[in-house]
Length: 332
Ligand SMILES: NC(=O)c1ccc[n+]([C@@H]2O[C@H](COP(=O)([O-])OP(=O)(O)OC[C@H]3O[C@@H](n4cnc5c(N)ncnc54)[C@H](OP(=O)(O)O)[C@@H]3O)[C@@H](O)[C@H]2O)c1
Image 1 (spheres, rainbow, N blue to C red):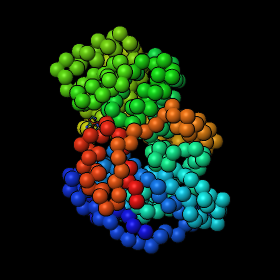
Image 2: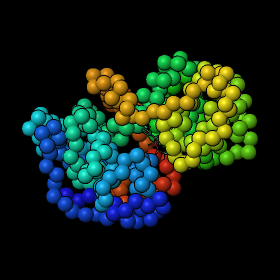
Image 3: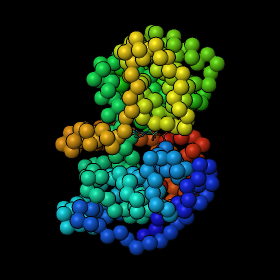
Image 4: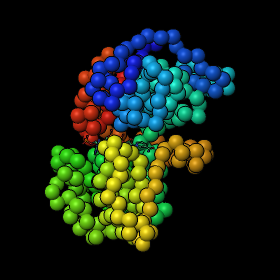
């Protein structure tokens, strides 16, 4: 099979991606509970960028095949997984030896979702991570019966799913982005509350809007002082949920009096922990609900384009220069 291979981690993402090489190797042999998937497509996610920089929580033995998520067809399986052969699947693989920026990947059946016939395979490539993350995050909004929320990195795909869930549940969303062009796009899509964090009066605008809407949940994928501003803008009895660290900066500027006297808390969300907390049966039920919403067109991931394994550097440069535009799909 052909795969992309990362020879070394590098904090400088351009240097890290320039190191990527296409390499040929033997097909992996599935163990008893594994399937071998012929990959249809695999997205580029912020976790892949952090992985190449060596700053993600998964560090593989080098040289490593990047990519954690894909769609494809099962073409072989171990003795306990033979029933999967021929099935269309989405997978999430964090194995040391495997990666999804490849022709094929080996995956444990626990990391595989069998897809309904009508599921679009490009959409399926981005199915195992972001839709479930948004679902898990939005569960917090439902539990807290929050009527309004704040989210940053609001041009992201996770943020778009959260907005959709909020719309269905009549929850107001204050969206924060870092570029005016992203704000313009969201506003032209009919999204009401959009703030740009580099605007001079950003903090005043956020405070004003928060006093009007009384948000009790904030989703932070950025960190730094922005997370602090979001926390301070929340109403009493509220929660800042940290699920990403895109700025690479520690959260700062938290008003300690709010923590002590206003019952405000900070929590973390991680998809893998959430998945094991809810258990297999509940996860399968949610998968069914989400797949139906993809099939009927309620939910979708924006895809900006495709890259072959050979052309990955060009594709990655395009993605990191404008991540809000949609996902790049690596297609072997
Ligand atoms: N905790 C979990 O289990 C979990 C699971 C899935 C995803 N996530 C996290 O969710 C976040 C969104 O993922 P995604 O796949 O939806 O992203 P995406 O669609 O690829 O978009 C990335 C977004 O992040 C913005 N961004 C990048 N660097 C930024 C920075 N330093 N400051 C502010 N905004 C920045 C981009 O804005 P520009 O257009 O301005 O570049 C873009 O809107 C990521 O942090 C990801 O790691 C967490």
